[in-house]
Length: 87
Image (cartoon, rainbow, N blue to C red; front, top):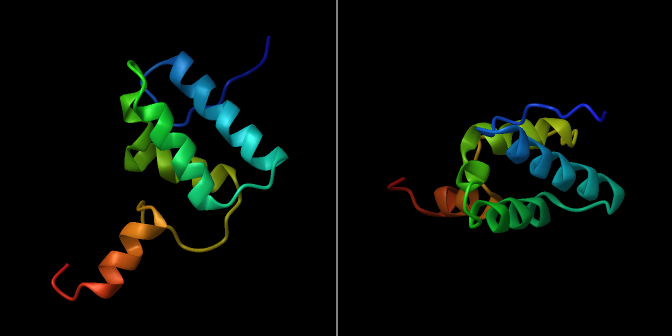
């Protein structure tokens, strides 16, 4: 039996789906933005809505070994925050 990591999803099926995204990202050398796109697509499926929750994104980010500090936001959100002084 394959051990499934806990990525902060509410179910084992959710954690398994996220683990598949992580493994695919590693195998295909995906960028963070590509991974976020995959998580977004997963979150649009019934039963996997939490895939874009901050906890899940942070777990995935760490699992992929990205080295920059991560604030839980997709790059686009950080770029908007940097651009908009009212945020």
